Length: 411
Ligand code: SF4
Image (cartoon, rainbow, N blue to C red):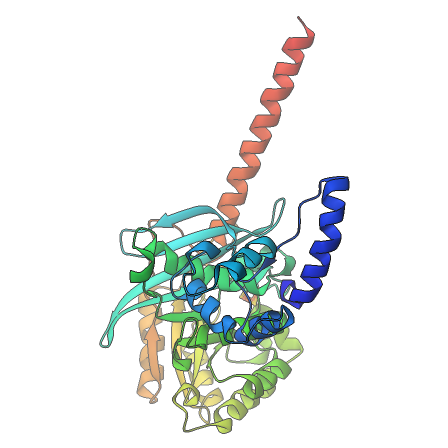
């Protein structure tokens, strides 16, 4: 992880590299400050022989004013700015595709490495709420995913690697910045109001980077988000749910998708390792830890509606039984089919009657609105489309250059 690098190691690496620069002309590897939590940044400055409070100053410039140039950090001495310029950088992942829908939804595809399969997707969904406009950002935590849920387009791409803290926070940074690009630095504001760690990947399998990123989201010197507005969504990595309960107070969502083990083993294979009984018990421990805290008053249950698979009336009855002792809110998600998906979307009537059964039993049960239909379909699919286009463009370029080669050799 990039943040394991300390200032002293960078400086000595820089000194060493500066010798080799003249000999081998290799560029100095700069440390990216974007992903560092406050504790990490404080240590970084202390290792440089600077005061700890420099960390909160720099964090504000990065995460509240969206500045990437040290020269613009006017409350930092010129000497320190020069020093930072030499050994550090503030670098968000490269945007290879962005799309802003008419309904306000925004999507980005970021390149986080070389070659095919190094793309991740981030989605921002605005919605009017009684407390004002909400802008909810769905953040990815891994490139691809190893868990292979049968209805998920990301799972079909396989697992490539974990995202670094800079790549995770970089998604939130870029979404905020997208509203502020043309605003003078000192007038900039944070626009994203809510975060869900629900994009590509299983966040609890990239635990340290996700934890530190969520700490930055909550930090008053960075995004200062309320703990109720940062949600971690997991498919059910039980030991890590318990770990998270100890380490941070944020909202919890469970990708449930099936009300019995037999069906869930098929749809969400990690269920074979941590079956429903264990998962529900972990959720109860999460609630019990701090039942008075508003972020832990309930667990959100995500349930994708798959036609003829998990949407029968008996499934709704099983849900009622399963969740009877767990304070929960249920979110029904109409399935968004992707090419070669083995499932279809449940009919509107089926979804409404499923909702009614759960509501009549006393659950708060909502149906997720499908948004941004003009720019994309299922989560993870945009990455597939961009990768396809890149692949086709590369094949086309290769063909043209081969043709030119043949023409040249023929004189
Ligand atoms: S639903 Fe989530 S955990 Fe399952 S394969 Fe997709 S990204 Fe991974």
